[in-house]
Length: 204
Image (cartoon, rainbow, N blue to C red; front, side, top):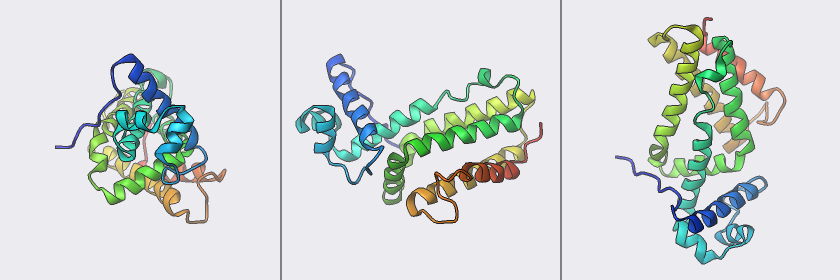
């Protein structure tokens, strides 16, 4: 059974300190990779001591898990079915893809660290499966809600393949940066979204 990621401390003072570290880390990660940053960098940016960091997170690796947990938790709920009223199935899926792309683009260095960690520790993602599954289930519910009917097994499979293609290209861009389109190229998202929509082949 996968381990459960330890959440932030419940005591108010300790939680506030932990949240300072998290906010500081996200700010630092806008310009530097996780590998380039030290515990001292996080502590300095949070205006806290290195000892305070280790009291709350134990290690840099465990801190990364807290950061990705925070990232994933903010993503759950983005696809509540009430948000999609009046939208077509294709519009729902297109907006879901755009949301996924924008979130990863704005947290590129965090995602880079996660991909590196998962490559060296295959069980890493198992700790976050419930969040990924919830986001997928919210998407499927939103599409079914707007269509007023259940997706067939073949439709679900096409959506899964479309998501795999979309995510794989983004992940490859973050790790290897192959051409011809860069992740932040104006044509990257429209091109990849069209491919995913074509593979999904959703009928409104």
